[in-house]
Image (tube, rainbow, N blue to C red):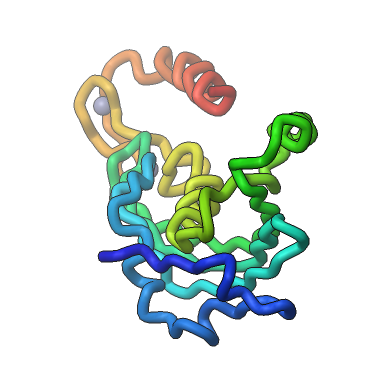
Length: 183
Ligand SMILES: [Zn+2]
Ligand SMILES: [Zn+2]
């Protein structure tokens, strides 16, 4: 699928509502090719994007709802994840002169600032970046998922296995879980 490309020259003085101007047929396919790790799949359900210019800086304000599928890190059960986000990003031209780009570098840690190349922007680039920022760090079916018994493979959310040493394992699991939360 060709990414939706917006030329800077087609953004009117009072801004461009991308969905109003171009329809929304692009929404469901715009994440095609994205690696949504740690999810297995991810697609946009709805999206809005408003582009406006401030000098040569491109202001992108938008929102999206995305549905993803993954598997629980602890018990491997399928998990559905819904992500909803609003964003406001300033995209500056990558070809700024040396003096101007030095100013930009001061803000590089700021997630609100990005870059665009040449005479326009691919809408996919904007949503890919925003969706990646919204992805969960780790997929869990629930915060207190008990996971799989390392001895017998039982799903401890469903069955209470009677593995020997289970009582001794518990303090270890707690330590392990604490360690996981820190990562
Ligand atoms: Zn789980
Ligand atoms: Zn067991």
